[in-house]
Length: 410
Image (tube, rainbow, N blue to C red; front, top):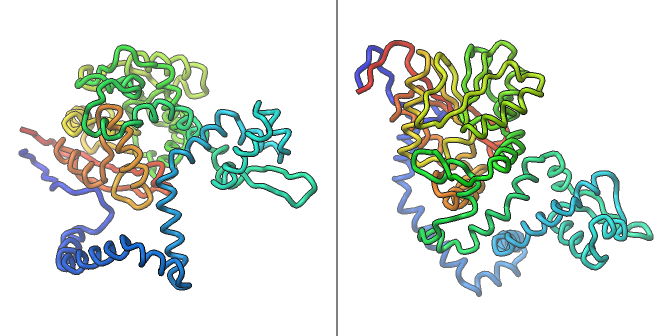
């Protein structure tokens, strides 16, 4: 790269420049001690006699119980998720959100026998989805804290209903890891998963895809708008914007931004119809095309990719980011918003959930902000930084810019 305005590559971080290298040196210095401790700890934890003594000793008993519970939660996780699925499918939590119910009322409303309803209610109570009040003559069942939170998050309910396809693809995780499963349910759902150029599977369900993305977008869109000020932008392009739910929220908050949405033709058609009936439809221009083969609208200064980059492998991601950079105005900004690895709050959803989800889908992976920064640098996008969000489990944000003066890439 030759440039009149050089911009040294920077990794995505809010830490001061030069902070990461000394910290790695400190970790390297203590590596032998850390390895000794890990080996000692693991030998102890693998010893049944030690486990029994730890469970019986009053000082270590809380730790032993907590670790035992965490391990069993991993073993029983699938059953827990199926309890959740049953509650959502039977609209149990919706009914309990209206008022507490008796067992007979729950059984009648869900079409279950009283024995089956009691089993579901007790299982849900064990998972904090339901609360049981047996202080009166007749036991009442009400929403628990997690059940109430679920009611407020329709996106989570949409993902739960979608899990039938996920579980079908993950029923043999070893075969999936070895690449022995080629045709998966998820590869047929997501339009860009069926080919290297992103043209997609010919038989993907566009309505199901668009509805799932739209419903699950709500909390992500709110996180972005509460975390980053877009008021400076004049012309914004949302790549893979689905039915336009995110841009509609942007339009409501920022009345002066010229808004553009780009997505695959069948998705763009749905966006046009839905936005036409919305309050902000006239302010959002919808463009149909393929990320990799069709031109983007010109003259934009801000590009957003909301839960898009992690759906693509590194080579495709760099090609997409390069194409974005080539169309950006000088000083333009790229925003990546998605669940990311490398954070204790987001790692379970990014590395565990999306790690295997994207494997079943057939492409893409969850990345750390630093890894996204490397991809941006490779595409000629610099001044990379992470923007803090209140709920990193829902999304984290990485921003990158191109230099304000002319840059020639070779």
